[in-house]
Image (cartoon, rainbow, N blue to C red; front, side, top):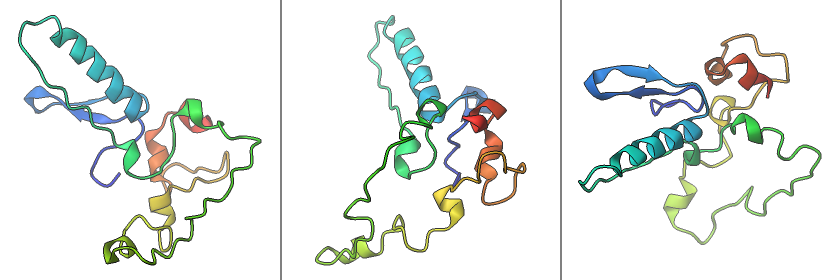
Length: 137
């Protein structure tokens, strides 16, 4: 996961240096933990700051199980910018790492057909973080 955590069943570094793995989709887990922490802090008389930062907006990967079938049976139009040439824009836009061209299956998290995951081979290692029920979704 690029050294930035995992989308499924993330591990958190807790106070005292201990790691704790929490089952679920990282955005959901981070939101739940943040709301719980904020509720506890709101009972205090001290001001507080919560920085709630998510992994999932950084690159398209795989959604939480509840959204896996969101577009089943629908035709999604190809975006006009899918094969953008970045013409007329800053040179930095052309060098953007997130461009579609040249991305590996590992980066794109292209999944194998249902039932063909064999338990850890690249480029599907991210599926190994998921529980069986998460993979089935």
